[in-house]
Image 1: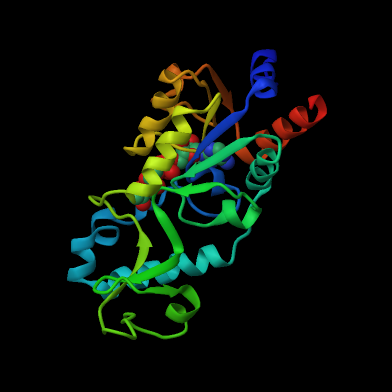
Image 2: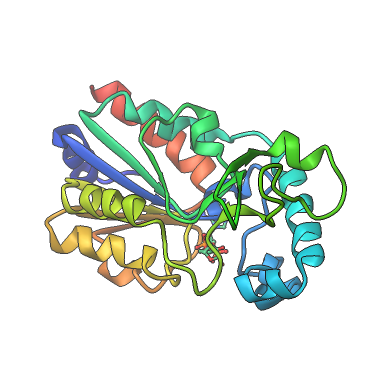
Length: 245
Ligand code: OAD
């Protein structure tokens, strides 16, 4: 299933970076954003994932995020997340750059994780930036307010039109620039700037591998496209590397 070239590259690599998207969590039961049953097919992103919408109707936005938080709290990492966490142990540097906000990479044991779009388990006050854990938010009904300054609390996720956290972006871009092998897994590779990372890595000399059941706009630029589900392919890849190593 895996080309000798990929295995040789992975065997000699010192630094590996992985960009993940919603597809990596699909087998855990988190719906993806696009595609047949995608979240953005049923709900309007401009009414739910944008700061103006939040200021206009915080009740609606919080109803949506309470629902998302409850779904995510109830699910578990899948075999793909665990295989990535295991692969990390075989490299001097192994970075996960994720667009997912579900915290499943960390829960699976990955250590170097750059969360480009935030983390749904965190929340903060938009006035004084005090942080609030989910337990505190979910234990009370209604729109959450800051215990210090009464400001509105929002989930710590990046909404449409917002900048990515600059320190996280810088670290992700640096990991991409120094990767010997770069994987793009379970992402439609259309949301920027995240989608620019695989191409940046390739231009900097990385061997670019894509894992996805369907091709994406970066497939033609990839050195290899492996068609299929990450929860099935990644454990097999781990087995191959462990056997050789
Ligand atoms: P998408 O929903 O756009 O794409 C999911 C990708 O996963 C598709 O290319 C699917 O083919 C693929 N896929 C589905 N099942 C899979 C599986 N089992 N294994 C591997 N791949 C699978 O999700 P993202 O690319 O993550 O942004 O979307 C990027 C951003 O758009 C999200 O972070 C979110 C969204 O709006 C924000 O909320 C800021």
